[in-house]
Length: 287
Image 1 (cartoon, rainbow, N blue to C red):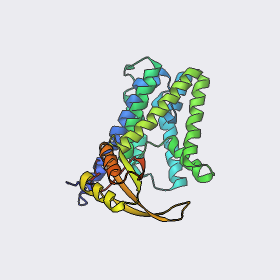
Image 2 (cartoon, rainbow, N blue to C red; image 1 turned 60 degrees about the vertical axis):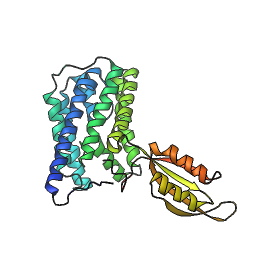
Image 3 (tube, one colour; image 1 turned 60 degrees about the horizontal axis):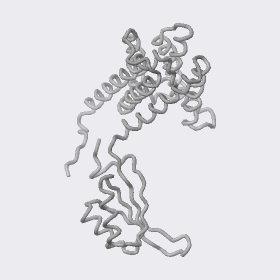
Image 4 (cartoon, one colour; image 1 turned 90 degrees about the vertical axis):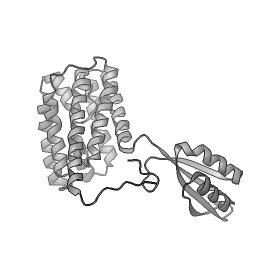
């Protein structure tokens, strides 16, 4: 099987690629904001959500609001969290509002709030996923969440949820409950799209097989499915007997075949199947 490796002799090319990803991703986020979220008053979290609320109620230019909030947060992140963000995050923090400003006169692509929340969530999630692939972020409330996380007992996920939840709640108060619900839809679609961009469409399955015929089962998997098998040691909780556990990772399309050969080798085998969201290594180099 042909493998693909990054050439370690070209770190400059890799860095350039990461910067390009950050610029493309930030641009997509900005366009999705201007053509889907802003015109439909969908404030689905983040600094962009705050700028949507302030634009609707005070008429403030969203790009200026985003710059005004992003830059102090970035500086606070450097002072309180260290230099871990780097130049790429600064690029994303500055470039996103810049594209928002450049595309502010674009016509909305829909005036339907539901379509705006779904398509806006897709666009923002796609853009952020690309930025994350460039090993950066667009700053904003993510930095605020990390600062709160560092100085409180709250988990990072809880901090993000609290901040975005407050923004969505503010949207429900400023606009109406319906717009708040649309903002929740946009936030959900964004998170799922980020996962999709990061992990990809191709899913794998991890299979655990508890069997007394481990040699026959493992040989069948190795020869008929052409997948590696790892033997783990297990102990029965009731009997206290030692029993082997076979573990293998397969593509989703291979599961039916594996199930058939396991049942043929040992009809009494106990099989556990779970999703493996991302697998790296020989035979699984999808990225």
